Image 1: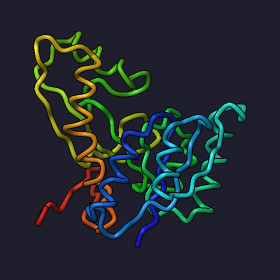
Image 2: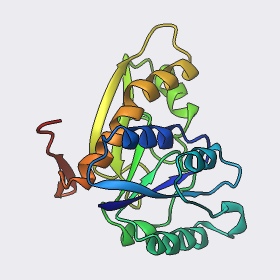
Image 3: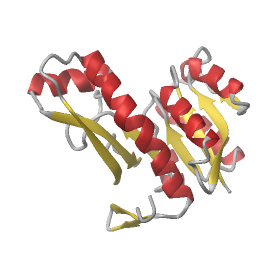
Length: 211
């Protein structure tokens, strides 16, 4: 049984999707053993407590820079014996000391179809604002491995939704969360824990048989 460590910073809706999927028995071969928050006031911590999942707070503001903070995160991941690290609304870009220590063992969900509307500065509503500004007809979310570059790791799963003419960034964000993020993230976690993701030449190949 693999140890899944979830990193959060805010409301924790993707964490809740993982907790719910775990409760339904949809995450096979792993379990959420710890939640780590960069924000002591994150509502995600309440979600973890309600689910009986241990939580650790490592406040970002207590560290001078990204490297020092990332080293603290890395030390905690090692203490927790992490097999898989899931970034679920984690608002700090980790230094490469973490990605180097956990290659192809850290996954993130990005609220757009990578390589569109991604990279540094593209997070939260900004992603959806840019998508609408560009006039795309479909958008969605991407679950991908995390490497040393923002949103540049191997793509695991993608899903789409239609963009409607009267969409606002908030409406599009909600549609993508409900129809893509909250479904694909638990699915990708289970695929990882079941050993059904292989990486070759920097690309992820997924065995979706029986899924």
